Amino acid sequence: MHRNAKSHSMLMTEGPIARQLIAFALPLLLGNLFQQLYNTADSLIVGNFLGSEALAAVSSSSNLIHLMVGFFNGVAGGAGVVIARHYGARDIPRVQKTIHTMLAFGVAAGLLLTAVGVSLTPTLLRMMGTPETVLPQSISYFRTYFYGSIAFVLYNICMGILQAVGDSRHPLQYLIISSIINVVLDLLFVGVFGWGVGSAAAATAISQLVSMVLCMIRLMHSDRDYRVDLRKVRVELQALREILRNGLPSGVANCIISVANVVVQANINAFGAQAMAGCGAHTRIEGFAFLPVICFNMALTTFVSQNLGAQRYDRARRGVRIGVLCSMAVAESVALLIYVFSPVLIGLFDSTPEVVAFGVMHQRTIVPFFFLCAFSHSFAAVFRGAGRAMVSMMVMAVCWCAVRVPFVTLTTALRPVLTSVSIAYPFTWSLSALVFLVLYFRTGWLRGKEPERA
Image (cartoon, rainbow, N blue to C red):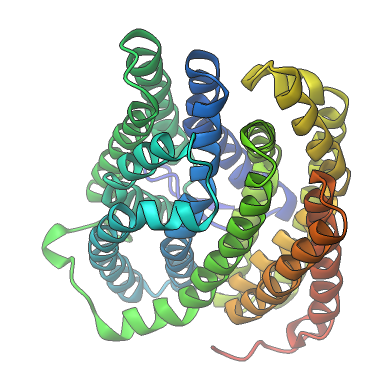
């Protein structure tokens, strides 16, 4: 394992594979744990201080937020793949051009996201069938969140840069700081001042701004391999084409999945505010449950990208096996704990019996199948790292949107109960896992052939 002592970057083309993946994923896990506290703190504090309708407002906004930011996060992930590949090949000039091009893209994307998110909020929420009793608070939360879009986008880009070069320690430090700020501001704005759900979104936006500033300072004072120089922040067309070729499929896939989840949320909304609150509480808990999966995915993408860039094909294949198995094992272990303690976990957000009942039913229908979701996400990350983001996009688009949306529509029409919505997740996870498995064993670099260049 080659690690720069000053920058904490990691070159993952040599050394023990399992140790490298764990060493890279563990700080990511801790960091994402704190990041997950952003929205979870909002839900916990809003649900306990402002009630079920306020919690439903935050819950109904989350899928729309994922829809709006998913595209730009996917593109940022594509840039990370490009950076990791060039970094693994030790092509530092290309690393530099990619980094500065991505930062310029991030500024433009953040401004666009602010304009679109703020202006379309009421229309999008009404399209989802958000109940009128919840709508004003949902609009307040959603709009306030998107006023901080540029900080959120640039923060994710900077995090992606650090992770692409194998540095997962500094992002952890920044997330701990910003998460503490977020929780303190949530308690102050909502619990002490009583400013409502919009102030919870403001606390999140301020916290993300702190993370972005800390990441930028780190990159501007890093070593010369990936140091950011603000005077060089401009679009370089070749780098932009490479970023978009790798990132657009991931961004589109994120949007497609989010659109499907928005449709699912609209079906949940039809069962009322208490069902919205219960399912929203599960979504927050699920976010924690999938943190190990997300972290192994990031480690796998970086690992595969760097090793293919260095033409270490056999090492890349061995890393895939280790990473996927670890991801599935951890996901199912967490799922068991959630299943057992489901009533307690849902009750932390809202102890109303009807909310708890909806949340427990929804949760216990879904969590036994977490290993299938982990499998699908892991192989999607592998294909992205191999420069085949289009494969991941197509599988997700078909299985998690083209199949999930009509499945939910049909099942709820035939049997109008919340369980009909819940079963859509394990069904479509099973389908995507099967498709990814078939495609993976058909890839050339599994059989010792070099992958075609994208």
